[in-house]
Image (tube, rainbow, N blue to C red; front, side, top):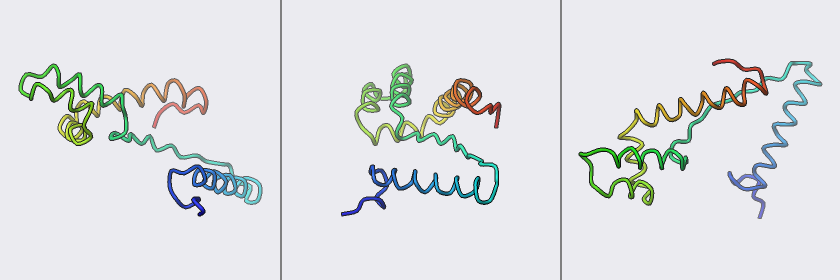
Length: 116
């Protein structure tokens, strides 16, 4: 079975990397165009363990929630998803801070990007 078309597999990422490399080389060497890169800054909030821990600690300090909610956020995906949707202000501040750190420690020193 060929898995190059199955997202997430090693074969898929290898194929994707080769496609990107081929397109970049074509544009820079054949078309004589300056390469450009796009960084999405995608937050993937439903897959970030640090956010899960932060939300758990946040609701643990609240007085109007079930006493076991903080533990359920850590253990149960449905509880975590509900917390992401309920406490949007925490999620927004978390990812804004994370993006500021990413820009300062990586994007600026490596690519010279200063804002966006």
